[in-house]
Image (cartoon, rainbow, N blue to C red; front, side):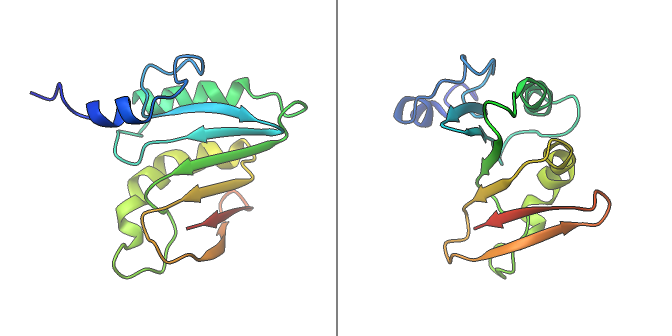
Length: 136
């Protein structure tokens, strides 16, 4: 039926998505000290026109970098990884959809999980000539 999708998750991990002008508890933002933190969903549509993409576009436009100079994105599936058990293809679509928005906004840090061995790497986006640090 689809009505149960994410129900247990939403009850176990409530968040302030409504305060972040998000229609879904799967993506939202919050401010933590000098940081604007965007929580994104690796398992929802992220392409142009999708609710997550449209929300992120609006959210990034609303950030006041004088008040929250740090932009941090958090997601589950790594966009860049050398883990052979969880290849980059797992997050490729989301990366193609959302990385340009994050780069254009000057995102400082992307945190992600999925692959449990911890590594850090600096990803270079040649088109944007920008760097984002990824920790996974």
